[in-house]
Length: 178
Image 1 (cartoon, one colour):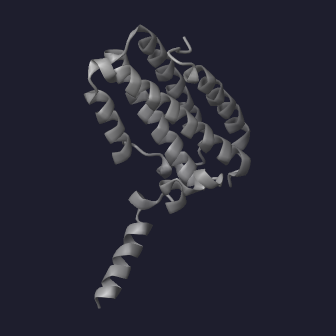
Image 2 (image 1 turned 30 degrees about the horizontal axis):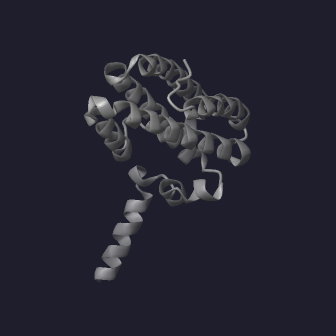
Image 3 (image 1 turned 90 degrees about the horizontal axis):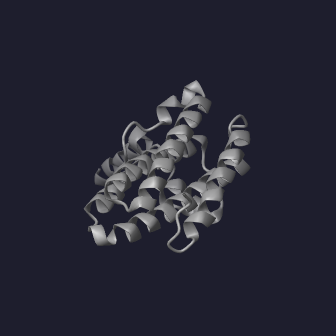
């Protein structure tokens, strides 16, 4: 009886909307193997990335140095634009995949950034930006090259190139792309 209850609980949890993201995408296995995410996973991850970047940029505008504040202004504009573009491309039957609030992992990243001492902020924010943009390029490339919705990849290739263009600028030690 206990096994049946446990099995039912696991199935219910994995099929509920809050757990709709596939295990492969949630754990990073798909990314490590270069496997394209399902459309629902792509939509959720892209939206979550944009929402997190927007909130991180707001924190950087308050706590960052002059270069970071200027970069944060660009991130606010760019991520607001990509959020709107992605939302406009999403088929009506997948609108529910768009998250309306930050997930726990994103909230923890932002809390850590918010709580960072002023003298450590640059290091924390800079590494967060490099990591976030690498993850975004991977997500967009994987979906553009193998996603299951043929109407999305053409636009995603262009967005991927834009994201990829930011990475070399972020990688320059102590230099910001503005």
